[in-house]
Length: 432
Image (cartoon, rainbow, N blue to C red; front, side, top):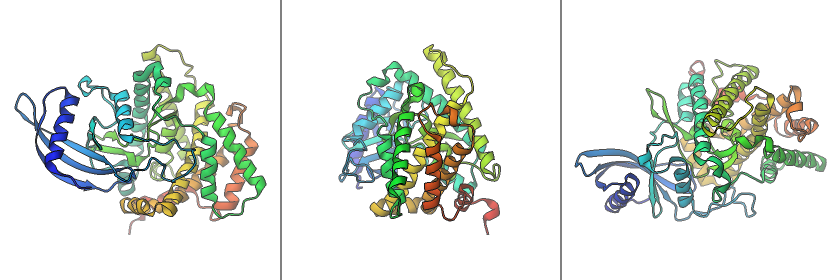
């Protein structure tokens, strides 16, 4: 990406003037730096803008510039030729619309965990700079902080409810916001990537296909419509940045793929991630599950209480298995998606995969972790008290059969997710 300072100053002046509703004169651009990004759509730079308003006092903003690549293709990273993924033909206007739905004009002072959006002109988007430290990098280097994860889950509950309240009953009117759908077709495709050249029997493929259809029906069940809202859709720790390290002020970045879908997807992406849970504090799978399930209930009560208080709609907030089950069914779907993404990147988009590895050399272990977590989640649903909370849609025998297919075809080493996580995170006792 080549950036000419004078045109950048002029463009930024117009963008800031429009977003702040006052005349802004950008005096200087300082500390301009092109930064590597895992995006196939945007080139990214960060800089400091020195500007003046009508009061003639110098002010400054730390900003991120996202410039749409000239070779942008609306296809998903898998480069599929058929339509299981809905293309974003114009990610610039799409991103702008998402921010406007959530934040509105900046002068309103509406707080969001999302980085502030200052505007778009031409191929450029201007956002608040959330800093250089993301949660993923922080946890790999300094070990996961379970108290911080707990705080973030509560904030996500508040954030989700703010998005829902701001949009209100108009969520079905957001026609240009992509709805998460065709989960069965996506799941089947991603499973085919994961299974690769393994010799899978036709009967086994029929089992996987049947479970995919049932999961798709389950995720779209009317009983969960209250949780079917605007979501980040990619809320892993790599998209959560620490803007103020002392106060642990956090910001969410990369809203270009936001969707309407189950809010449990965001929780799964955050909590079921190779670096999210501290294995020193929770060294067993059962301990980690109990910790996660407590966070789920805290999220659910936070989110629903805010909706009840603000929208004056009555919801049943008694504790039951339905929301936890929704989380674990979402967990199956997202594990399969995440594992296949790593494989697809490595095999079909080597340039982007190289960037992933440069930013996180441990990334090559991620597909293995997601497959281990997938197996553990399937087994947990088979062996525990979830059968009566499947809404009479999902057949427990299919889950058990799928577990055996995954185990027999992929998990020969029997390594669990905690062991893999410990090889990714630099825990003090594992250092030389």
